[in-house]
Length: 201
Image 1: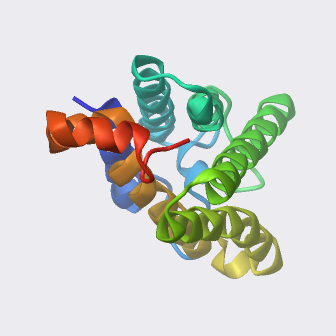
Image 2 (image 1 turned 180 degrees about the vertical axis):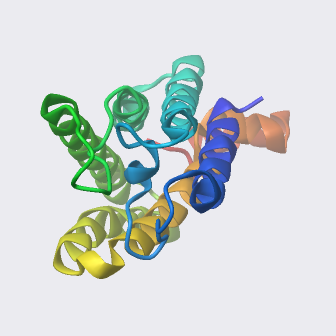
């Protein structure tokens, strides 16, 4: 079993179902995913648990097949898991919340963004296959540009964030960790996958 895929599935389910279990008026277009797990918000534990499941799955798969190129992705997983323990501020400004927890949430989310961007940038430089280099470099740009777009277009920050996660998680689903992906393709192909031009390096 690839725990990363399980974590992504749990996270996606919590996000898709979010408007059904959170506060009225939540919008997938304008509201952040983190606001589903905000402090003093109905059933916030569902989204918080999804963050932990996602991050733990990524770290667990990285530990099973560890090599240094996986370190930034494992750091991303660790920070995403920790995000689940520190709630975002509520959507309603009248609802009380702990400022320190919101600040920690933001710092950990930023660290996760830096880690995943670094991981993709590394792959963009070190991959031997041109197509894989382009994909990884493009995802590094996406991981940097879309958060900036969220700041510039707050009315659409929710949908921008969801597009970013869709792209990042699609890559993680298909390519992470590389040795597990190779084993799924067959033993003979695994060696080529681990040492050839398509391997995470």
